[in-house]
Image 1 (spheres, one colour):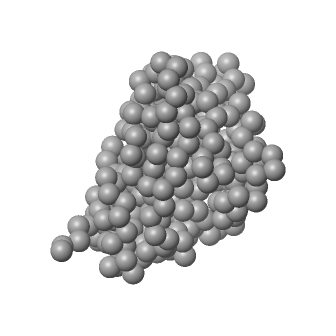
Image 2 (cartoon, helix red, strand yellow):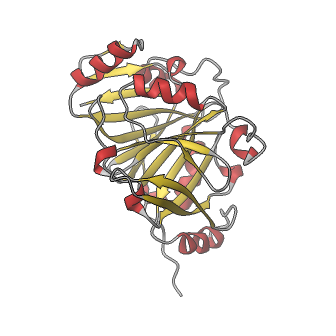
Length: 282
């Protein structure tokens, strides 16, 4: 039986906030995001989501007394720590990863209870399969099969005061962008990665772009790097599309969040957002 090569398409991103879910959720609401009610995974972690049109942002952490569960998640630095791909068949992806010798753990199933906007109770159920951890800089990269996509993508949850409609860029900073991009060349095929003039390597992932770039480019685009950046490859920034930059500015002013305003973008430095820089574009 032929084994299909997965198609790169961003499903969601994970921001590790560890034991600071209260602080992180309050901050992201001040940034102008509508967040879902706190969810609790059957594996022990907890989260809030900012749900967009084609993808979403996940604040992932643990509640008091539960840091002993899923301890591998909390080894990454606070900040952007998960690059997650869409799939309709986690088991097929597993067979492909195994065939390419880039497999990590076998597919895992888990769920979290959820209350839908109409008041009904349901479960968001997932199957995930992970790329080999040693290949991924400072976090995880995995595929997520949504068995109940309606329990995530609800129109009522996709309306944000800052007007954001989708994540359009995921940025990894590295001294050697080619080396940082190489696992994804093995995963999706070398033809899926494009070298850019500024020395970055770009992978188209649905409506989003995953970019592997040097510090100079990232500093220019995101007004700096995380304060604890040590030069190693690291997931560091997100660009988000908004319907109206005026809505972003109004949200940040109301939330008393410092920002840098450009002609066609607004940037919030990583030091103000749990180690992940945010760039808003219209």
